[in-house]
Length: 126
Image 1: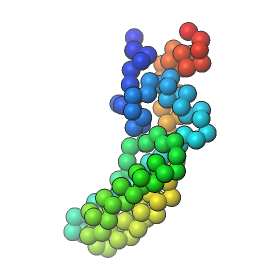
Image 2: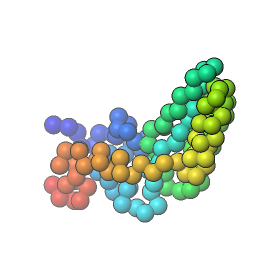
Image 3: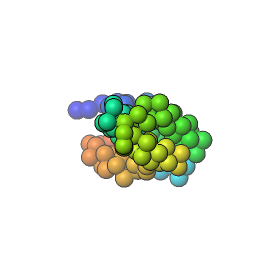
Image 4: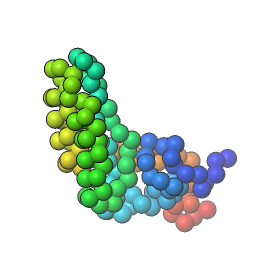
């Protein structure tokens, strides 16, 4: 039997020390967003585009901080692959500065696959 107070750090969400039930409660708040950011890495003629883990954010300013950090990674390491480096770096910067990609459905699907007793704990029934 899994501990219902286990942290979700192993999950596809960077949610700190939330339990699964705590994460479900946090997602019910309309100010909570699940966002993924993009970054690029280039090596001569090869450019690779990656997605960040899902971040649980509660404000636009927090999304902007993550977006700027991932954009800086792209600017420093992503521009140098020709011809796709500048193109994919510009796309990653655009996505990041607009709050990242919404990953709410991905997180909700992951939560739906968790054991039922944790979902009951979130609703107050045991």
